[in-house]
Length: 106
Figure 1 (cartoon, rainbow, N blue to C red):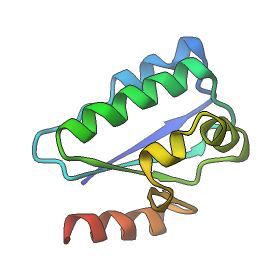
Figure 2 (cartoon, rainbow, N blue to C red):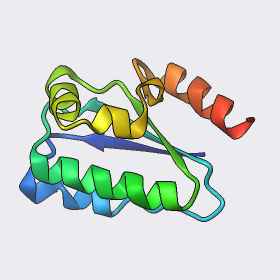
Figure 3 (cartoon, rainbow, N blue to C red):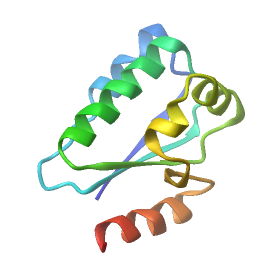
């Protein structure tokens, strides 16, 4: 399991932060803690979609922790939640870690 915390608004210029997330081959679950992300634009969402596709191709599940209202609305509107799976959006880091443990011990 790997845990990353993303801070600040994710707009065009900051989308590269997502591209810098390194997923090791031994990883089964990636937890993205987003409590400090107040907003998200379509460029950053596309970077998240790319990350999800890379992870899926490697058999890695992404779990999101504490996604704020504006980013969640952008994700819902784009169908991103269905892509990831609603069960992989958790309200807190402790809930996200519990979900990650479930995935790892399947």
